[in-house]
Structures are given as C-alpha cells and as structure tokens.
Length: 260
Image (tube, rainbow, N blue to C red; front, side):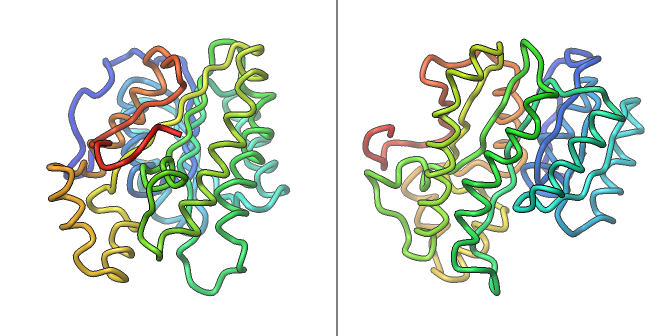
C-alpha cells in the first residue's frame, strides 16, 4: 500500500473473479485505484505509457496479494498500441469487468498543439471501443475527470489549465453520448469528478505555473482530497450503484455553477 493509501476501501474478496483495467495506473490516482481493486480480490491490468519499471514494481506488489497482475504498456493515442493491449488482456484474462479511464494529460511540453484533445477525448473513445468486446453484461466503465473540466462551461478555470479542461469536458461529453449503447449492453457508466487533488502531477504543474493555486483552492474548498482518498472514490464508483445522472462528484462544488 502506498504511504497515504487507505485500508479497506472495498470489502476483501468482494471482487474475487473480476478483472479490472485502469489506464495510467503505474502511479498516482491510477495506482491507488488498481491497488484497491487487487486488495478486493480482482485480477488487474497495470497500464503505463513509458515507465515500465514502475509498473512492473507495482504489479509485483499486487501479485503478492494472490491476484493476477498484468503489465501492459500502451500509447492510448495510437490505435495499434491500444488494440495490442486489449488483445493481451483477452488472452491473459479472457475479458474485463471494470474499465477505469483514468489516464489524461495535455500540459506536457513538446507535444502537438492538439495533443490534449487527442488524449482526453479521442483516446478515451478509442480505449472504450477496443474494450467493448471484452466487457460483458454487468461490467462498469468509469471516467475520471476534474471539477475544473466538468464545470468548464459555467465556471472559468486557470488559464494554464483551459486547454486540458476543455478537452477533458469534450471527452466526457463524447463518452456520455455512448451511455444508451452501454446500457443496452448491460454496462454501467459513471463520471467521477474531483476537485484539485493534493499530490498529483497536474496539481504540482499548475502550482508551478500559478504559484499559490493549490493553497487558494484549499482555502476556498475547506479541504482537498489527497491521491489515496480520491482513488478510493474512483474505486467505489466501479461497484456502487450507478447514480441517476451518471455522475459522482468528489469534494466541494459550492464554487462551481451548475452541473453541466
């Protein structure tokens, strides 16, 4: 368990026989989320983009829990890469019961101008489409986003984050458009939206570009969730009943207008 991870987020054994893939799960929220699934007995897929040793170390830790932990590197913006990952998942695990669309980005330097949209919208749909043949009746898809993105149409955010926020909201909208199809297949879909999360790469980058941003938001909200606490909410969203509006809001929303 990571230093901050919480005990007993999901009941021990409650996911025995289930299979879960979390994109971007070699670190941060994704790593804690997949750890909670493994601790509940699920076989898991640790996905990473370019940090194989970190993903392999995590998988080795999870295997000690007595579950299968498959390590799969994939560039989610590349169809062949995603399809290769899903082929490996099918061969090793036979299918999926939980898909958490956690990986996102857009603040990296040196990327194409439309990289945020490629990753936060197009890649999310690409992963879902590639996973659909592996998801059976009763499966759950969870999309992880931020309040700054979820509410971007009604509440302005920091200028540095606008391209990411707009692209993540575009991804959320595109995924929500698939809800009727998913429901027809017996697949639940939930958006988990969180406030700024203490300790994430995004929050650190934003605070570097906009010094004091985290402290200001913490003062506004009264509390900011840490990585382990937010990951616990993501993990629970994969097993709790699907909310009527397919949305799980984590943390303060009083500063945001409307709910998109």
